[in-house]
Structure formats: C-alpha cells, structure tokens
Image 1 (cartoon, one colour):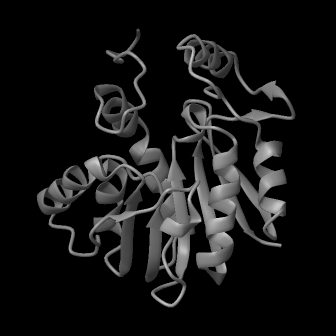
Image 2 (tube, helix red, strand yellow):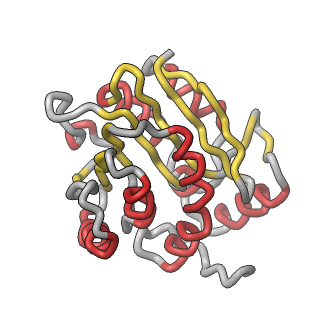
Length: 215
C-alpha cells in the first residue's frame, strides 16, 4: 500500500472509502463548480457515509442536495456529517436501490438538475448503469445531466498502467463483477433511455467525470 492507503473495502463506512473520498474530493469539487447550476436540485446516488455531498454543499448554498443509498445503515453517518458541516441545504437521506425501481422517488415530488455518482462502478455490476440511466430519464429536468466519477476503461483498454494494476487488485478480491467498467458499456446502457455521453473530463489519479444528458 502507498500513501497510507487501507486495504480495499467498498463498504460505505470503511476506512478505505473514507481515504478514497478525501483523496479525490477537491478535484471533483473543482469540476462541479464549473458544471453545477447556481441554484436548483442535486441528487447523489450511492451516497454512502455522506462525505462528498456534505463537503460540496457549502460551496453551493442555493442548491438543495438530496443524499440517497440502498443501505439505510449509512443514514445516521450522512446526518451526522450534515450537522458537523452545518449544511442546511442537505436533505434527509432517502432509500434508492438502483436495481429496484419501486424504491425510486415519485416524479411529482421533485425533479433534479443534477444526478451524480462517485466511485461505485468498480465495485458494482454494469447493470447499475441501466439503473442510473433509467432513474435519470425519470427524474432529470429537461436540461439536467448525470455526472459519474471514477476510473474507467475506454474501448476495451486501460487508459493507464495504474488503472490496470487497480483493476487487477480489485478482481483479486474474488467478488463477481468487480473491476473497471468500459465507458462504451455505460454509453450503451444510457442510449436505451434516451441519454448520450456529452463530455468526458480527465481528472487526477487517472479518473474521469462522464457527463450524460438527453440526446
């Protein structure tokens, strides 16, 4: 391990997730400051312990942030970070399971300018891409977009040796469907729901932000 990195553990309350979140939060924030509206509504899927959403919230005082997760065991951690940050623009977390549309919010309740997901695809099945795209097609405002952050392959190839090594390390855990996903596979799932990849932003540590919006 380098830089004091804990062993890979995707549980949202693990030391590894906290380390990874702190490592990348400023680079993501810088990109989001250029992308986010000055006011509106943003939904995070797979919020986990709430590190990112509560870190970003003070920089967007007129954006209402909605955390969500399929694991309700994370909700107290999200609320605790909200209190610590005095983030009045972070709502109570809600249950969203990307594989279970019955858990998704009603469109009559609220539509979103932004839906974002951070560091989930390397430890989740590619089918999650279909869930995110279907959710976005239902809940995004007409000019809204999805922002997905993480490491990805491109056209079946690793973009850096470090990402290839990271992929080997993840797959060594022996969990089905862990590993870096291909941008083209996410595009394919998005197209099924009328969405297209609009921009691909290069970020530090061989990561990307993928921006999807209506075709």
